[in-house]
Image (cartoon, rainbow, N blue to C red; front, side):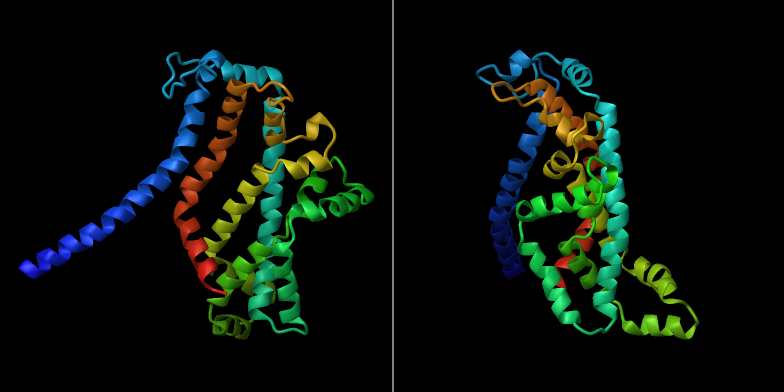
Length: 281
């Protein structure tokens, strides 16, 4: 009895430092988010005052009014929804099919093609953005939704994750479906896709998040104000010599909410999908 009690105390003593480290890491993430959220409701003077205040002395919605007055936020939000939604819808089709092909089909040059796909993960976007822009411009997609969406659909990391997810499914399931007369597309959509639901939801969250927060590509491939996204609109509050902190915080909070809600609903599948995709090769 005494020995069990000693072991239990020892386990608790080991867990305390781990718990403290996790609390510190959580605070490092949460404090800036809370600071931004509360600052969105502060007057501009209070935001830049010294010493700084964490809880607003005076709650105000003036910053949100300033955002609406300065930029056409509804148009920017609509553009972001189209950009993120279109990219995600096509990304599910393209990346899932590519991952399925790498996992279930044998074809000439398969290993080399997969390695080349993975190699693209090491190329920074800044290296390819100029040639990518020239391709979009030559194809007549400049300053259009198609120019925004299509170049951002196929992602090597997503293909790798989906291949790992499909690899965990026994190939006998596909063989049994073929014997029953199901077509290859039927096998993919009706049999295989439901089996990798966590990975697909993870892909949706990553794709929506990446497109929603993307600042650089929409700035490169669009020129008219009506095509700019919400991230581009928020950048207008940061000038060369001045920064409108209140409006910038309010706009950032508006931009954060859809991603926060999406992550809350998909959290369970996101963790499961990242674990399965990260552990399997």
